[in-house]
Length: 397
Length: 94
Image 1 (tube, each protein chain N blue to C red):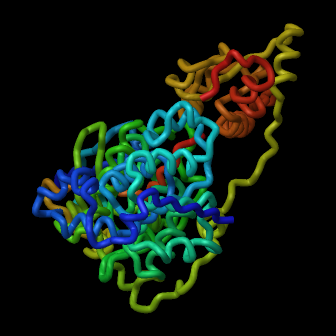
Image 2 (tube, rainbow over the protein chains, first blue to last red):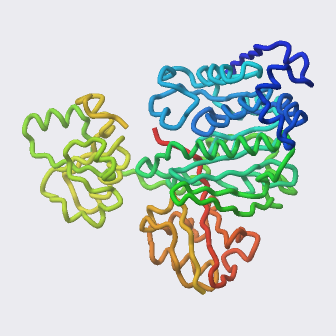
Image 3 (cartoon, each protein chain N blue to C red):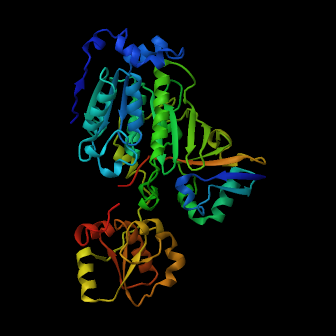
């Protein structure tokens, strides 16, 4: 259920939307003295309504800069709670917020930053059922989500409602930014008609993100949003901005509206919201690999057997940088190197493979079974479960 | 034609961790097959089982999408930059 709370600390400001109070003039003076913004632009900002979907890495700088700039009404959508692993990049939150709903912590922070604006909070999963209803009251939608189903949902809902969608996405140290859903401009489906099948989405061995990257990408989204509201400058409509923080390089590619786009093309076949989990999962899925039986051992069983003195060979299939975070003293062969280094293993010994959560090591066990290994077990739940069930001194990451 | 193929971050793991690869190719199809010949693991990330370029992977020659040029038959000139641009959602594993 969407929960909504509205706060407007300065009733004077809302009853006279076409002027700025003395306090506001001082607050926004660095905008007002620039001709590109000026009083006219600042009043446009004050009347603007922007919906930020996601209050995480991208949503943090976005929300902060939009609130600071005086965007009159900001909607926030998130369902998550603040976790300490968020703080490396989600600068809306502090250590005291760990465990709180993101929406509550974000609302407090933005209201503290700017008490003159209205913050609407939606503590909910954006879904096909609620998206149109939530989006319809806003002028501009900003996509700061982190998964394909929600990205297609945000795109489709924005196009169906005729609203611009300021898009940003990140991976490790690379970001993409553009503006979709503009009249005559392309949409996300023009760029990518379909999502990757789940099996090809990067696994946790390839995950992670440089903390400052969403700060940069989210700030660019904020800049585009403010420009769209004020009506100045060149927008990223029809341009895909690529940013590589490692090379510290920006590149720009042309984006075209696809005349055959099923959503915004000449003969659209998508005229209402669909089931996005299905679209990104079942439909996008390749023929699934035959599920072979992966023999498992629980952390507690492994501990008991090691204590008993059983001869078990621990194989760690994570990456070297993960091994440095914590390890069980196993022999390290990253999953990607296993086929080349399989000769390092003795098939006559009983092997227990593990990774962080048990997924990569399950692949390793399948591979080794096909390679003729018979005495091989997967540590169920990986090093995370080991930390939970056997040795809490092993850090989780 | 000597061209440079820029490998995006998510695919670098399958391309010897390189940011870009220089190779000889007369068109986009040749450039991509040269690339997958050198890095076999890339193939399943670029092509579906029926041999078509995946719909979540776009290929650009300089700043233009090959879907609006001559697709994989788009000719290449010396110094052209071929970019592979996959969709990224922004997921950070938990």
